[in-house]
Amino acid sequence: MFVFKNKIIIFMVISIVIVASSFLVMAFSYSHPVVEERTITLCNYIAKSNYDYVAYLRPNIVYDNASIISSGEGVLFLRLVKHVDVNYTFDFIVNKPAVTVVTSTFELKLVSPKKWEKSLLFMPGGEVEGESTVSINSSFTLNFGDILSIIELIEDETGTRSNVYDLLLIAKVNVLSSTDYGLISLPINHTLRITLRNSMGGGQLIEITNLSYKEPGSITKREVVINEDVKFRLYASYALLGVGLVLLTPSTYFFLTNRKKDGGRSIESIIKPLEEYLIEVKELPFKNKDVLSVEVKSIDDLAKIAEGLGKPILLKRVSNRSAILRLIDGNVLYEYVVKLKE
Image (cartoon, rainbow, N blue to C red; front, side):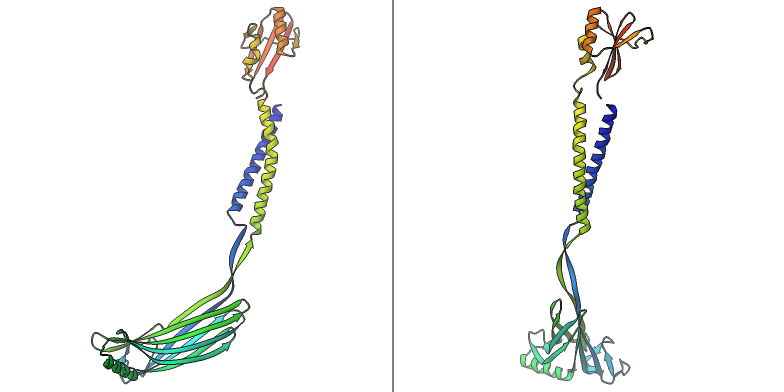
């Protein structure tokens, strides 16, 4: 019975380990989505808009008598500048086959902080067709003598004066590019700011800013993806849980049933009917070959023998769950062993 009980316990432990493992795998699987949405990039594109300029100078000392200054090479003094040539370049690049159309217009405006502005130029840039790469190029000449004359006329007309004026060269470019993955529609407004500023010392400076602009982009789509490895782990955890529960249920039943047997009984409750005959001893007399040993079938039979012979019953407790009862009549030894299940 003890061996059977140990086997049940081992079986239960194995079942519990399987169930616990299934919950661990299940928890890990649920921490990762079986189905998820991902953004898939189908194609990438970029639009690059750039201004550069060359300033043509009068004879001078400050620039070592240089005749031109290009973009970023130094401060421009209005008194030394004859005119400025501005070049505009636009490039559109898409990394997939495409049919592309680029249209453009340009406008030059003179703006005063005194709430007036004057359009000096409006020029359609035309239309350019291409494939995955399309470029446009336009050039403008800004004569500051003419511009200063216009400023003087407007100041006289409006009665206003300002230390700062802005020349805004506005490139409006529209891109339509057809790819196998969809249509790219990209409007670009890039403004070159040329500021005419009277300095604290009375000189006039030209500041040119916002030379470059770029706008990257992409065509994407949302895609539902099933993570097969997560799905497999989840199903495996369900299978492990099922196996574990199938094994755990009968083993738990047998374990609890086995514990219930004799679970409410004790040595005292069994020997209680024999109280008037019992003598508890530390050691029992040894059996020898001259003594006839008789194993009694039940404790009731031992009680009948004690009552009939009027003899005491010797009790030795082996443990909390077992005891030996003996009745000696001459050379005859009657014995009953009480052994309750653990």
